Length: 325
Image (cartoon, rainbow, N blue to C red; front, side, top):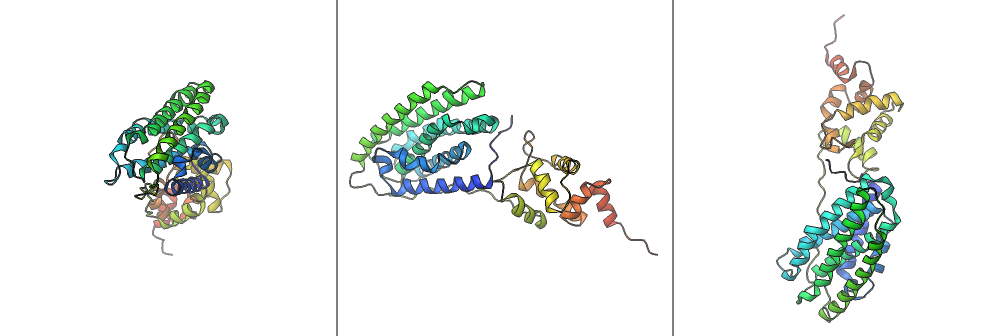
């Protein structure tokens, strides 16, 4: 089965990048995230209103940045149990949750999930805060190991497993997890207040987020269309039905039902990595570049799509030598 990740809009991507940057800054610059006893108050305002998919993405990015930072030569080996827990339990749980959000539309705005997502984002920021500082005791890591294990178990058993089987969330286990979270936070604050006394400044930089690979376009006209019409609305892949409408409007062709269906049939015929979902990436649309060029440009290509002979006939008539009088 294909990996049904949520289709993010450009606005959601901006919200993710903003929240990630803010939380990373808090993790590096504000030791009270570890020792103040109220970390949720520092983190929740930045993630609780950006949507479930975006909140999951923020936590995932921060957990990855923690793992990369903890792998640096200057980082403490005491972080290894936490790295293992995150890689083996937390990140797979978040990946399942992300797919769950994409598959179940009614779950995308379930307010009962917001508190556990806020706590997950909080722990991800705390892991980053710990990674950039020097620790000398294994006891300083244990509360976060316990918190991450608890969160992965709750996300898997009280949320994802229930939603996948069309059952209500396990509200009792969710409620008990908030008490468990508070207990882990009390232990963390108490332990690190002593550990970081007089030495709470960061000792290394937080590893950067993985850079996103940008497509190198072969057809410049398709690139201009994508940047002006698609990238401003969608984070990456674009639904085929929406892309058909955008192509028709960009070229001044009526976006009637018949025209949309014709363009969608052509887009569906493009070789795609995801055969299940009706999505097109920049690289996949660029595969039409040769056809667009042969037709004489984007406008001519779209008009050719809805013409009786299709693009092949339009390209042939354009390339055919003119008869002398």
